[in-house]
Image 1 (cartoon, one colour):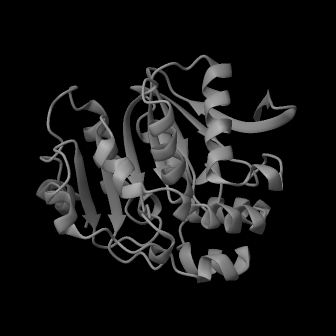
Image 2 (cartoon, one colour; image 1 turned 180 degrees about the vertical axis):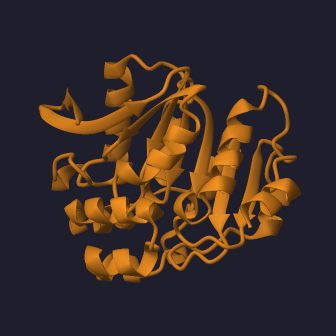
Length: 262
């Protein structure tokens, strides 16, 4: 287990691979651990970091640090202390919101962003996420695969207050305005069967700049990186390897991916 001292606390993180830096940010259910398959899939070309945010995994429970703005400060301190420099971000749920907000405050650090299951207001989030125990949420959302089992072991470590306080701070930000103003490429990935976060309307992307694009994974729920890892990791690799300045609107699920995975 790797730890780093930040703000007089020990923050847990893991790192894998070599190459361009990439940082994974987990969601409300789980920790860094469910990113392992994605980190392994791109380890040849990317040095992947995954951090446990305040109140999750093996990072400390600090109720005064659970707002989105405080998680962003943690992320900035981590990147600075590790000397990572310009980085691509991959966020899921809570981590997606932290990544988007981080980019607004520190745009010079972010190369591009992938956001998965991201809500643009609190009304898009199933209230069960706030009210249920972590054990109930795990049974509801995690499938019966070895990778999901690994995530299931970590999820009970989360402080329920970290979930609630981050949800309470969602509506303090105008996320649509933030996304419209973003200069970096941003790929939205959504599970069509996600019971937690409502999908963004497809027509929305016709009004967004060319550097914003959404791909819907039809057989995925809230954890597409676990439900359909082959498709998810191929989208991840294609987006990350796209030359700077090239439109991302051409990124789609390829027919050959579908045939190979069935």
